Length: 135
Image (cartoon, rainbow, N blue to C red; front, side, top):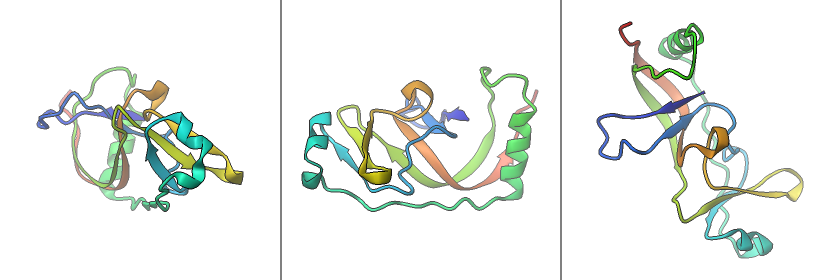
C-alpha cells in the first residue's frame, strides 16, 4: 500500500493511492454524486457499469513487490521509477463516489486510501520498467 507522487506532473500535489482498502468500482455499479442526499433516490442516479481491470503480473511487478516488502518502514519516502498501466480513478472535491454493493446496499466515499488520504487511485493492470532507488 503506497501513495504515488509524480514529481514531473504539474499537479504533483495530487496524491494517488496504490494499494488495498479501496472501494470496489471493479465489481460494482458506481456514480459520482453531488451529495449524500442523492442516495435517497438511487433510481435518479446515472449508474455506470462495473469497470474491471485484471492485473497481469510481470517480472517488474514482482521485483517491485519484493523491493517494497524488504523496506524497514512504509512511512519513509522512497523514490522509484516504473511505468504503470491500468485505470485511473478520481473523485473531485465537490463530489462523492457512490457504489451499489452487495444486497442492494449503497455506499459513498469522498476519497481513497487509508483514512481517505487521496482523491485519486491507480488500479493497476501491469507494472513495467521498474527501477529501484539508489540507497
